[in-house]
Picture 1 (cartoon, rainbow, N blue to C red):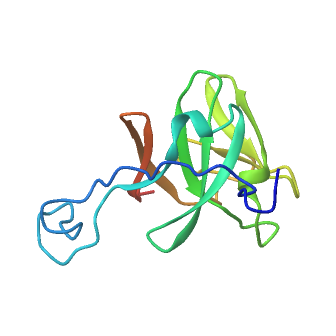
Picture 2 (tube, helix red, strand yellow):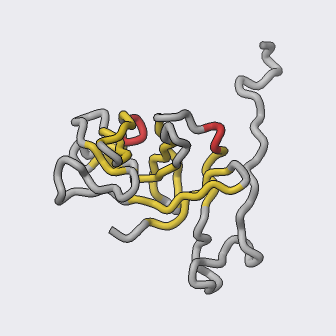
Picture 3 (cartoon, helix red, strand yellow):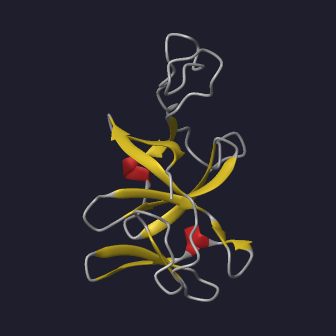
Amino acid sequence: MTAAEPAHPARPALPSYSSEHGGQLGRSGEPGEPREWQPVCRLAELEVERGATALVHGQAVAVFRTHDDEVYALGNHDPFAKASVLARGIVGTRGEVPFVASPMHKHAFDLRSGRCLDDEHVSVPAYAVRVTDGVVLVGRRRSP
């Protein structure tokens, strides 16, 4: 590599999923609401059984791709460790429940709901996720 070459090859830009109102059409269809789905990366860029962090709707979100190609998104903040570390956690399953275990204190969080599997009184935010044309889109926070 020469000094003129970039350290990382340029990635093509993610497609825009804005509405006809410049990305300002929300779930209810009212102008002025933030758009519901935010592109975060291409599915091929997510490593299987690993997490990645993205800023979505102003929040740090951990995005995970499981061995069966399902994609989930949780808030990245571990309430036990009081640190933003869940994207670096260990992905696995307990029975039929996909989870991420925090790298700090190993508490497991259900990837579908954000519920802590080790303490029923604790949860982290879970976000809607969809994949469109190979692009991972993260939507609004799901209701607990």
